[in-house]
Image (cartoon, rainbow over all chains, first blue to last red; front, top):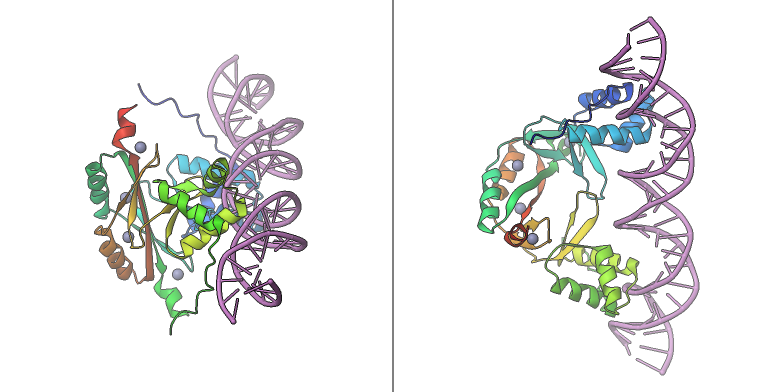
Length: 135
Length: 135
DNA sequence: CCCGGGCATGAGAACCATTCTCACACGTCC
DNA sequence: GGACGTGTGAGAATGGTTCTCATGCCCGGG
Ligand SMILES: [Zn+2]
Ligand SMILES: [Zn+2]
Ligand SMILES: [Zn+2]
Ligand SMILES: [Zn+2]
């Protein structure tokens, strides 16, 4: 019972542009933000298309998404292996941190309480050295 | 350097009803959900007031809030000490889990990368034993 | 190389959770 | 009891995200 064949992703100028932009940015950016930057540099891409491209990238595991406190979604080009983020709440700079002991801890605690199909969500926020200095 | 005096919270039927409802529910509920339940049981409370009451409770540290994957805010009556949640993604049942080693880990990793004012956000999702059984 | 089926695109409308507005109600304090 | 000022609520406004649908264009087959 193998997974159904993936609908075959088509390569277009717009999707290429979105992925390329994400590649050269190093922090989490909102869809609206990306849309504005694409428009500025002349690569006109519809807002709806930006959302669709990002959704596809998330589904393919090429991009990570996280929700800000106000509920906006922010996207970032990320490595495909499981990891978490250390995010500067001022400039958006992000560091990927992997393999923390919480991986084992989460699985153990969940098992102790009889929970199955365990997932977890962990993000660390702070102010990076550069931002702390210039304040 | 003490904090400014809090504006003194007024005790009203509506705020009492919201807090009472949260007290007898054991999982995270959305504002819309709480509003609908209050209306059903006759305690008519305006939607805007539900939002305001929940916001006040969060500010007072009596209620925890978390964002669902679709961006809706969900609220739950919680203990005031720092802790995290083990949430059943099927029935919403929640277990509070405290003092994991991740507390120290988060602080250490952040420090190693020069980040200050560190906060973190951790939730564990799974399917509880009861829900797994009846499937 | 040329077609044609069908996914992709985009402008704008629709959606929907949340917040704002503002006139009125009512808790609090004297 | 009365004044003051915060709380309330119905509806409008906001704003991020998704949907609609007519048109565009990627891509495999011929
Ligand atoms: Zn920074
Ligand atoms: Zn992890
Ligand atoms: Zn359950
Ligand atoms: Zn913690």
